Amino acid sequence: MKHVLFAASECTPFIKSGGLADVIGSLPQALVKEGAEVSVILPLYKGIIHSDYRRDMEEVMIYNTPVGWRNQYTRILKYTDRRVTYYFVDNEYYFNRDGLYGYIDDGERFAYFSNAIIEFMYRTDENYDVLHCHDWQTGAAVAIGSIKRPHPGMKIVYTIHNIQYQGWMDHSAFGDMFNFGMEHFAGFEWQGMLNMMKTAIHHADVITTVSETYAEEILTPFFGEGLETVLEYRRHDLHGIINGLDVTEYNPLKDDALDYRYRSSCKTKLKNKTALQSALGLEVDEAIPMYGIVTRLVSQKGLDLITHVMHEFLMEDVQLVVLGSGEQQYEDYFKSLVHNFPGKVHATIGFSESYARKIYASSDFFIMPSLFEPCGLGQLIAIRYLTVPIVRETGGLKDTVVPYNEFNHVGNGFSFESYNAHELLDAMRYSRSIYHDKAHMDALFNNMMQSDYSWAKSAERYMSLY
Image (cartoon, rainbow, N blue to C red):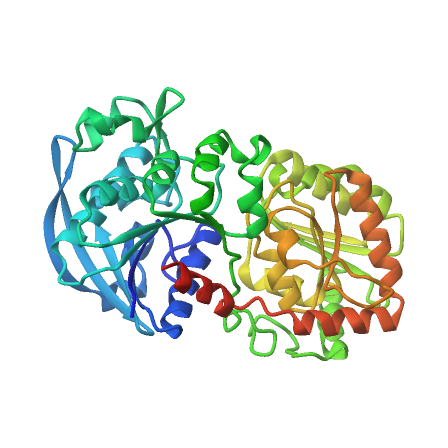
């Protein structure tokens, strides 16, 4: 049995800002089912301190964590759920704040967290075979653990969830945050600064990322965000393993957010659509194809393509429902669509988990034309809720959405290759024509039903890697 310690900056159900939390919340549970013993270590944020979970935590140990020339107070709390043990690093100076990230001292906060992780490993009675770190916030823990090796024979896996965020710090942070001689400086330095993701790539025994296609993409200058040469040097240690979906959490048969629950019934799914049409003031007609968008309104998500062609597409007999927030230009654009296409478009600026699920369940098609997408969760949820995804062929979108072939009825969605607005428009128009052909829609429904994106297969690959 492998004993694995996951180190990450967020995890459902305790605290979440993005998809990383979903992975850390669900992958350990899947690994336990494969026979691993798994623990997770996280910061104790203000949002967790004031949650119901805090009441059920027990204190494990208190110690001082060296951060350069300083010794910082550290208390470890423990919580167990479904055979996974969660440890929380309690330091109010660094983590008792609103939100998770975005502070001027984020580099110091997560350097402290990384040091505290390795100190915990030295002090605990547990003997870990694998330390599995995630994204830049635990990049320094990879280096510290690699150099000091708190447990004999322990190996370190590092997973890149989004290479765009790398954890840059000034040169001076090396002496200020870490207790190493200058012989280790080159492993931390990159392009005139310290870079925590580069540090982790340099020191890890094995590197993974969240889809096979993204593993290939980040070896190129366009996707590599300046780290492609470092990754090229380690390419034989780089593995792409697609993220799974928590199919218990996302289950249209048991989802309380839905007006009508369903497993495979097209008729019941359509009831959700007409209920949403009525609630939003759209024309109530199940024959009108509804297109859903649930996303952060940022350029990475392909919003530039959408803004170029959506006006033209909405001239046709279709409806659009949008949920998201982000850059002002995109928020204003969707507001303008509501004004220009009354009864056909509804846009909500903000986010609501329950409303997002209504959109996934009610829409006929889900639009996700990302510029880049390491794995993507939206297309997996859409397929789970039997809503046909329309995606650009990048990263995990390419690995999970099989283009529909109307001649042999193979495929579970629609896709296009180039980052080109009119290719997106062509894909949307093609989907609209397919919608009115029952044989094709029945085939798409069946293919989505057969698509298995649970964590089981990915967990098996991680176990082989360990």
